[in-house]
Image (cartoon, rainbow, N blue to C red; front, side, top):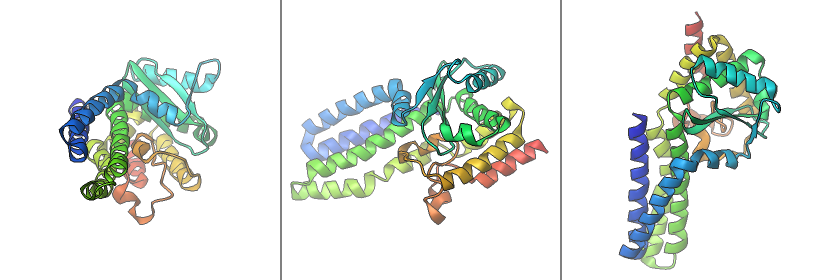
Length: 275
């Protein structure tokens, strides 16, 4: 299923770029846009994880540099029967984490400075296990490609505004792009990345670490931490984090447009597991 959704995202990106290229510059523009879209799809598949990690200035750490964190990941990945992922630390005070990569053999787990400082050992194990569950379930490629696709569509809207604004017809096209295409980034994520995958990762992560209550406690603390501590995050990558990095800035619309299910519901399901 994830392979089908990944293919669909790539196809959508190619079609959108080709249509906009034709609208702005005719058949030649369509060919140029098609070539750009194909190149972006290639880059998304092979390099989307590196792009996201670089976006957040994540630094890879070794066993000697972060022994407790590294050994925790190593121990839990053995329980999950996974290859050892690379381990990264993000220099941000918001407590959060995500996993990325194109498959379990080329995966990475990234945690912020804030989460390492805030959570106790059991809670951090629960978070790491949740991210390993995403790797085990092969959610990471579709998540990374969705982030890259969303960013590309937003850039496409800006491209139309810049190059189409000089003519009446171009100005109309640019306006339509800005009105309709920019929000497509969020809509694509909502359609391609089911929020149900977070419930599955919570369940599987709790089984990997054997501590559903610790993961439930971690989610509650992370939610409060995200509300108190802003994060300079890219909206197109919000779905990758264990809790929404914009939890404190969306008001009553948070649950409607959030890429994550309500934390209260996730906690309740984990507590049911514990009982």
